[in-house]
Image (cartoon, rainbow, N blue to C red; front, side, top):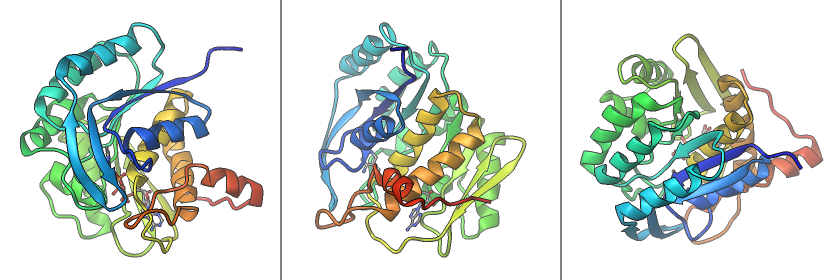
Length: 274
Ligand SMILES: Nc1ncnc2c1ncn2[C@@H]1O[C@H](COP(=O)(O)OP(=O)(O)O)[C@@H](O)[C@H]1O
Ligand SMILES: Cc1ncc(COP(=O)(O)O)c(N)n1
């Protein structure tokens, strides 16, 4: 068999299987992408929240990165939880030798409200890592943190996307509207054009891992050579299906369904985006 497209995630874990590394690998697999993973932190969490976190020693982080990069192709990679500046420095050094699109999910707070990254790390992420990205995918509060501006309207979302590209130096910015009212609308700005991706709001609390799943899907499509705005459009479809078919599991915010898209292929429920 020919060699597959290969995607790597660099992120924290979720033993309950809905977010982090576990969500990323499930997404890669669904999208026929060979998935690889480098763990930054082991997180004891479930659908109700984060219980405790253990950061891997820095040498283990760099040795994992080296183990993957020295042996296998990387066609695209993403980062999720990177808890502190020391870890980010190791990852930055590694990124500088890798010639593949970098998708950053600027993970700061879990859906449960628990912080996943410290204050110094927010600044380092913004100043040193955002400029290396092909695309950064903040939700509303992460976009507010990155830009320093309050976001209340769709116009504010578009302004934030432009600022993240033109002022912070990202390759592109996708501002996710999951936490706004009304339709679930996301805005993508790639430095030239503004695109919007809209779906109906699905009435569910089971959204644990949506951001991880979305950015992993974008990484998978980019690893296949898909053009950026097409990769986002297809990923919006993927994450919407995952939310529509999400699971009533656990006592908190249940996980999304990574095979939701297969259920829709069977029943023919496809959506178009503006
Ligand atoms: N209830 C919902 N119905 C439909 N789409 C949603 C819903 N909640 C979130 N989304 C979508 O899921 C994706 C993840 O967005 P968001 O929840 O804002 O990110 P995060 O998980 O990082 O907080 C976006 O495409 C957003 O529009
Ligand atoms: C290790 C890890 N990374 C990221 C998230 C964010 O999850 P969500 O996609 O729900 O914002 C999480 N809960 N745990």
